Image (cartoon, rainbow, N blue to C red; front, side):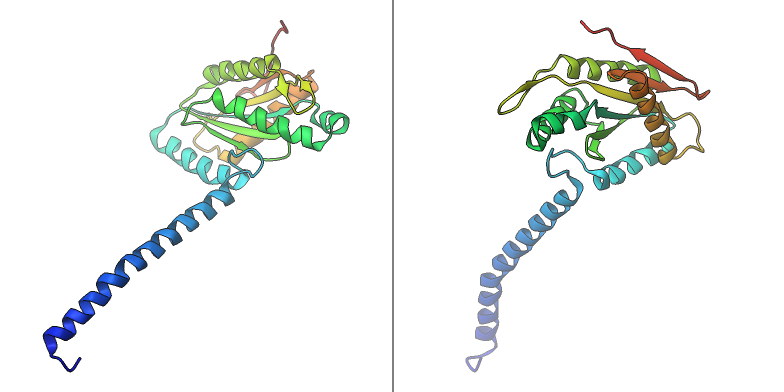
Length: 216
């Protein structure tokens, strides 16, 4: 520092030049870890799809967008039929494998814009932006058939399962996302109470309409 102002500034510039990249590196690592932590809090650890927290975040955002654009939005509630029997007969590790494969199978049938989440043990929810009731019911039928025809391969067993689905579409500006989820959940239970492996639409007049798929 006694060598003069020019030398002092040169010395400080060298320090900044050396330490700057290090600070930048640590900042990038910190941001990456923060992103990974956020991903962990929004994703289901078993299946890799969204968990309930991740679903709530994305679905409410999509719901607000729908209200602004005045477009269709439909929700599906679905679960794996008789899943408790699978756990009881084959063990929870086999049940976990089926949940993973089920999630993968459903994901492959959806669009990138669709929101798919696991919200309970064997219960899942899907938000279909810009889908009206007819389109959503057709998609639900496709999902039911895809699951019915799929052979689930575990480490020891080859297992067939079925799924039941409830569908509800928004019809009023006063309806909330929670209202829609409740209607889809009621339609799901109607599917299960009617024999499972089928789709039920919650219609505007609150009359349930079942779509029972013939088994090939």
